[in-house]
Each structure stands twice: as C-alpha cells, then as structure tokens.
Length: 343
Image 1 (cartoon, rainbow, N blue to C red):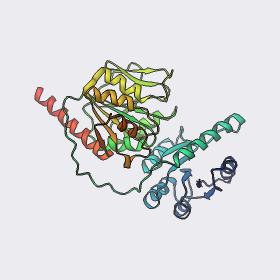
Image 2: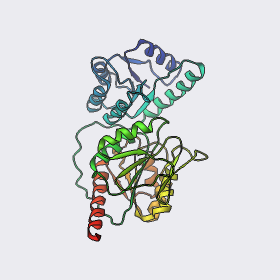
Image 3: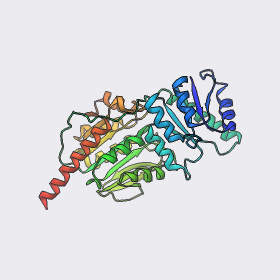
C-alpha cells in the first residue's frame, strides 16, 4: 500500500515512518512538505491513501485537498493536532472539500499512547485506502423526479464515514427553517460532535447536540452525542448509555426508537458509512410505511451501510445527496401547504 504523508515536520516524517516500516503491506513512505508538493505527488505517485496535515506552507491543506479531488482523486485522511481545539472548523472544511476521515495527532509519547495511536493509524489507513472516492466536479441536477409524500412529521438521518460533507450538502439545499424536526445519528468520536454541530449550523439551520429529555421542535436539527445512543421517547430525546449496542451512537437503535413513536410519518435517510449499522432499523421503518432513502452507491465514500440496507429490502429510493435535498424540500412544501390550508 502506498501512503503519501503531507506534513512539514521532519519529526512527524520520522514518527510515521517508524510506525509503518514494520508492516509488510505498506510500501516505503512517500513524503510531501507543502500543499503544492502534495498535488504533484498525488499525480505522480498515485498513492492508495494520503495522510495530510491541514496547516501547510506554500498552499494550505484545504486548497490542496480541493485540487487533488479535482485532478487525481484519492482517499485523504486529515492528520491534525487541532481536532478538538481552535482548528476544529478547518477539519470539517477538509471533509467538505473531499477528505474521508480525520485523525488526531498523538499528544503524548507514553508507551500506551503510542500503541493506541499506532493501532488506530494502521486501521484507519487500511480501511480508508479502500474508500470509494470520485472526482469533484460541479454536479448536474438529476432529471429523475422523486414523488412527494404527505403526512410526514419527522426526518431521521443515519450517517457514518464520509457523512459530514453529505449532511452539509443536504442541509444547505433544504428550506430554512425546515418545518419538521430533523434528527441525525452520526458516528463520530467524543469531543467531535459539538464542533460538527457548529459547522453544520453554517448552513443556516439551528443545529445542536441533542440533550437528555430535550423536546424536539420543528425548525431545529438535533445531532447525536458520541458518548451515548440518541433515541426518541414520545417527543423527547433520550440518551441511552452505551451498553451492549455497538457502534456508539447506534443507528439501528435510533431508527427503531423513532419508528415506535412515528411509524409511517417518518422520512428516513441512510447515508455513507462502513458496516451495517442502520439497515435493520431502516427496514423496520420501511415496513411501518415510512419513506426510506439510501445514498446512491456511486456517491458514497463507503458504500457499506446503504448497500446492506438495499440488500435487506429496506430502501424504497436510492438517491444522490442532491436528490435527497430535493425530496426533503418537496416534503417541506407539502407540510407548509397543509398547515396553511388548516389555519
């Protein structure tokens, strides 16, 4: 496996080289020290995965990611020391530009921390090297019409690897404020969710991390916490402790709880992600009469969760992020028209 490391620190070069050299499936580490070099090396080396800092000389990481995804697409893992500090928004901007994952630089050099980071780094590089990426070009609107559907009261979205950028796109495309509550269950790491909520708020929606016993309201977007499972009981959020359900937060548990409350009155979206989380919950919603959509395979960073849902027969509509935004906009129009006629 070819890895291109983009970082201007020789200490980081040595550190990553040391961690990878003992692994038989990794080729010698390729190195670029600035954003401009990264673009050229991505073309010439054709790496399987790029590990890139955001703060770079000559050309910053966001600009480099944008150019690479336009010219020579490759899975890019952001490698940053500022995930949970002042650079958090930049990490989300990198995901929007086309990066597939964010990995925090280790903050300590104790044996335990080095071992934990090594395991996480190797797992991330191996998994992300298989991620499906596409050339970033302006997307032409689809000519396929998705029909309207009346009587919806809530939108539920399950999302994992590659999801933040898709969530940003969908939220950007739909009316603000949206006339229904929107609940999002996003696989993430502790400490990441607040920054994600703030970043998604840049779309013009009110996005907050869901709180225990919080009542859900139209015009608001509620994001799952990373340290518990977001579920719904009547019209209130219930955060369930981790327990036996994995991963955390758990999309199956999320969908199933919403199904029990709202049944057919749900619009449910299953977005990009690894594994099978959410497929059974989406099936329960579909069987209850809810409208279920899965992100189309060709637009997913990882087509795991949507594909499993399709194989189960849980998906009524396969849609691009643009089509999902269009459908939700149609739902909003119908809700507003119904409210207007009844007033």
